[in-house]
Image 1 (cartoon, rainbow, N blue to C red):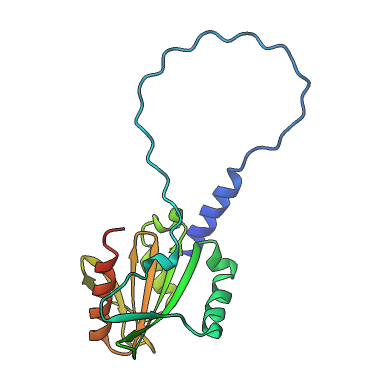
Image 2: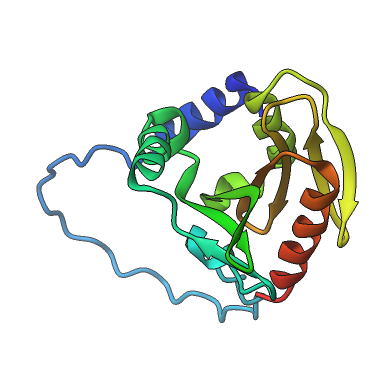
Length: 190
């Protein structure tokens, strides 16, 4: 999503605020005529709710989620507290991975987006462009579009799932794709 588009969107949102209240003297109001009987209207859809980023870390057989060291968590938290990210994201979660207790050279960052931003078209591509200028290889894993950046260090697989942007970091494409498939499958039913 271009910065100009976001700026226009935010300017519009600010300009739509409620008008200032003006004090006026009370006056007599005529009784309004009876209103017509309302016609049935569709029930409004429920508003999407903010999901917690931690909720994306489902149990995956054979793997364990490991809480990162405090300094790694602090670095990510500081990045997400910056206004350019905090206005779009409602939270984040970072986890390292082990398999049978052994490190697997992968970790996952989940960014929970504000529902209004997650619903915008092209969000995944915009996040990818903000991440790197390299061109992504597009994959489809478990029916989900995944952007794979194989020239970055570490390598990155990124996808959008409901209101989440999920970023899997690793060193080898094949194990990353296998794990991404497992993680997407584990989250298919909310």
